Image (spheres, rainbow over the protein chains, first blue to last red):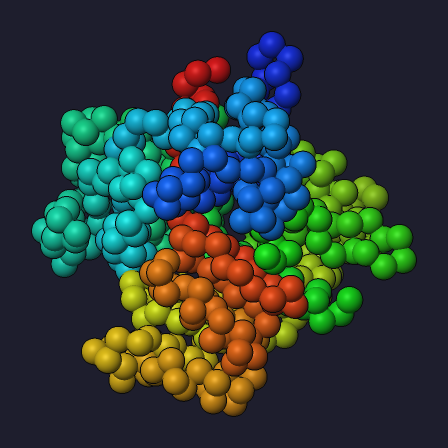
Length: 225
Length: 225
């Protein structure tokens, strides 16, 4: 399996550095999202409590998270927004562009390709694949749907490292195997199935039914407490 | 903000019961997904190591998670699959049907409504809303797109408790406020914005760009370790 599922600690490791929890890394992305909006609104300095309020957590947790980035905060002043954005982008590895492909040219792929957040974060979609002959050749958001046989060629040419699997559960493993064979380094899986991948391949899984189930659980809980 | 974001512990609470972590609750959904497949394949007994293998975690963690459900495992035998499914569904609150509505009749809504996992887990879509006059009246997976003005009526009639927000970021808060006013108890938010909700409303947020960023981070990390 991957690092992403089940394993709560990622990163750190060498030199006795404390380990980053998956939750902290998730929060890095969320901090970044707010900071990017705030800098556009002219906020050049932010406090840990502003970030905490935005995420619904306390400011001690924010300071603890941000301490992983080095000594950035100024006591009595806060954090310089620009500096914090740079540090977060560097730590997350998104201070560069990432080429990504999508397999499965259905509604989810269309929704993902129209999602403006991806381009803003430096993600570039360079390939879209589908096995359905009716879909091959269609243009989706400026990208032509290609047959799976073209994967290796397109992934190598664009040096794509990330792939999004948006196919039904019964073909997802086969697609993942083909992506790994084509040189992909990480997979974002939306198919409701656990993918088995070699240990050097990273995986993030988003099972949409699980998300709705989590919500039902929270509502259920709030009614019985 | 909600219980779901930032706050690592949910549930438990009364009577000195240990708190369930968000990660454990997520794993409950994933265990359930495997068990439901296995029971169809005729596996009437499962071990903690089979569940651990399926999720890529160790069996001690599985046993710890499942201990929250009561004394279910039999030493030397394992867990009775059927019994474990029943206990997980009960604990998650999905041993009933949940009526849900979707706001935003775009590609994401279409992908969600076609996702077979939802119906299997007892989620029933009873309303689909969009403010775009061109979409109102369209039939998507058997449900007619209604204007936002119909929210209160449809949500009340179907006793819908859950809502999925699949609109662009700039209208998401307004949609969420309308859903809360219409009596919704929990929101699954796909818009890349933090919703501010009253404390009694549950929230699960899925920011798709954050998921891809997490994946980029894992790949970045694996190249620098």
